[in-house]
Amino acid sequence: MLLQSQTGSLLHQDHMTTIETLQGLEELLGRHRQPPALDDGLRASLIGLSTTLKAEVESHFAFEEGHLFPAFVAKGETGIVMMLTHEHRSILPLALRVAELAVQAATAGFDEQSWRDFRDSGGELVEREIFHIQKEEMGLLAAISALLDEGEDATLAAVYRQTVK
Image 1 (cartoon, rainbow, N blue to C red):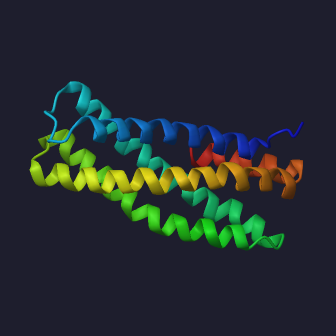
Image 2 (cartoon, one colour):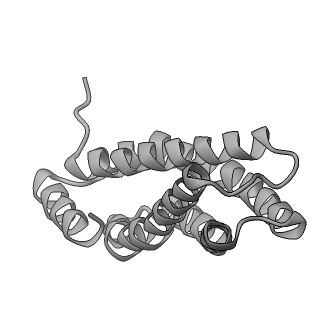
């Protein structure tokens, strides 16, 4: 049985939080053809969505690109780094846009146009981000265990805990 690395375990935990948030977004988008009325529950959901998305694309992506990916490149693993970095570049502005729209809606509610923008951007984000997480879960986490020794893993896990949590 392959034991998951400390770093891989931390990334996995974040992935599960993000997937749960994206599933909530997908459910919200599927429940409402028209702009939903703003109430306390929706406001809390929108703020939570914004917070989680920002953490995923700002802190989580930054850790991978600034700390994990350089360790992979140093070991000659550039393919996965290039693919995931490219995906980060396409997901980042979309996730920040959805987070911004969520905060605006949590304050002012949705009108027809803001709901359409939120629904379109949110749907695209769900699709891209879940596919990206699946790639990381299947490829990146296994690669961490295969490429990094225990010391490298422990060092990266400590950096992750300090910078992301």
